[in-house]
Amino acid sequence: MAPEAPITETESAETRTADAEAVFDCPRCGRRVRERFYGPCTSCRGELRATLGGSAREVEVAEYEPKMNVTPNAVALRDD
Image 1 (cartoon, rainbow, N blue to C red):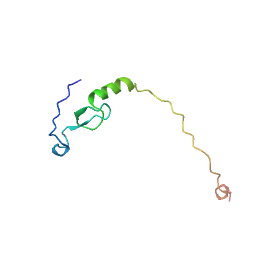
Image 2: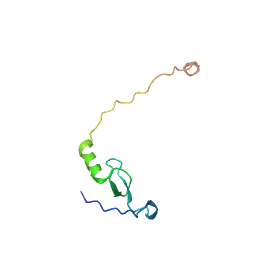
Image 3: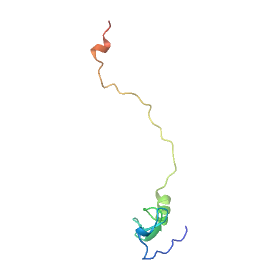
Image 4: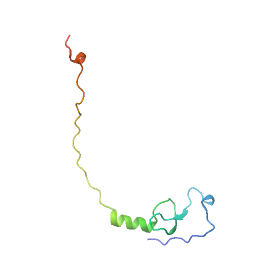
């Protein structure tokens, strides 16, 4: 993983642009980090992928069968 850039105390949210990186405390480990989006830092994301990540798998779903919970009305069933 790439080393994280040092963070200065003079940086603030008001001075950065939309494409710039934000400075915040990682919600998972609490370290001060510089990332583009708010969330777990790079090292926490890597750890989460290693421990919780799984491989994609195909899930079988039962075929759709419409439910008949309404009784037909007498007008629809009447023969003329």
